[in-house]
Length: 507
Image 1 (spheres, rainbow, N blue to C red):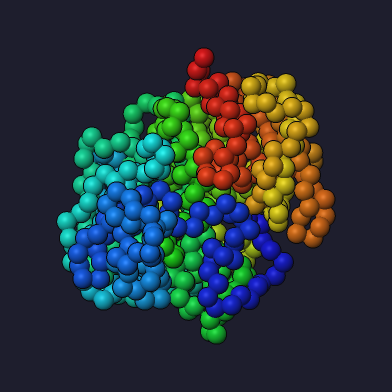
Image 2: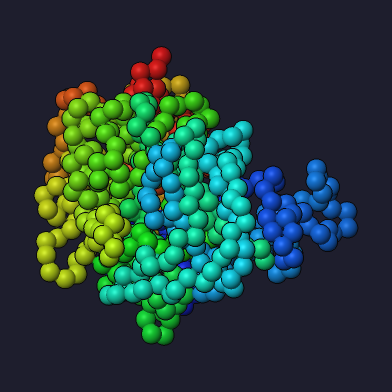
């Protein structure tokens, strides 16, 4: 996200997620993929399904296993899980291992206050007949301790000194994918820890989860005192400050704020559910895997960047450019990608890739916007970041005779409602284009920015000299239109299938 006009002071308990809500207009709220088969501890330590209401209202509908309510409740004593917070830290955790392969281990570092037993339910994100995830395993009951307070230095918050709480040995037969560990205490508090299982097997598509951008937005702990992200920090009165006072380095060795899921994570989960529903052959990696060379993207027909992917290191960009130049297609399903240049460094204990640094416009050194070092994002993506979209606008179809729009029912000049949202990209005529054999703009959509000035969004596709296709949706709302309830659009579903089928050589 581009810097806003000057530092902002926000009320103490307005979280980073709320402060950036404009950038994620389709926030999922409570995790919708948790369905009625899950069980949790109640206040007495007994295991009960979260949907059971011990005191149903008269006339309440009865379902299999007892009365049901539409979502987990948060009232103390209800027997349902309550979301942990960053002030009392009832249960919070992170993994110190990054993405792992089957046969390797995931190390969890978890704090529990007050100390008590807890369990870890591990889910894999996918379609799963509409459930959105499937429970893969459950830990034994584990002993929880209060870990030391986070360490802070120059706004950098780190929990690298926390003791190891649980090691998950990943069986060799587990599927690669995006996973979420659900942590639940005996007295009914819950939080989440995302992690990735990758493999080196061949696949048509490599899905790159934007963990670098996720961490840039992470304000943990949202306690009105300690937490900091690349966007915010707190002052001595508990007010939330803006970018001018935020961190320049953030650590991966800490939980995600609030419920434990990253801001914007839903964009990736939307694509995963849709892609697995229609049987695409997908491998998985984190953005840091591109940085350290843990995956070879030239082995895939296409790389998919499913969500907000704003922060890139030089190595990440070089790796992706080499993949494109070797014939691997690129699919950017969001906007504001490849905006900030960052550095990834080791933790204090020497573990590589655990610290993310982006000085933005502060301090000594070169500028860190890619477009300010003569490597504008348009030179890879084909379009680039233009600004925020305060209210959703229609995406206006252009060049409807192109194969991308085939069988979608979208005609020239048709508007696809609410599809230009959050942030938008467009073509900049004075900025160099990437080398290409052919290039086309597939949408041109007017909208009003935060000052009421009329601007426009564009969707781009070009073919590189290697034959690789590079697609950029130019809007935050494309991935949610694939599979998010209330936002799915059959025209975008079919257009995306047209693109991926061509990349994967289907049909």
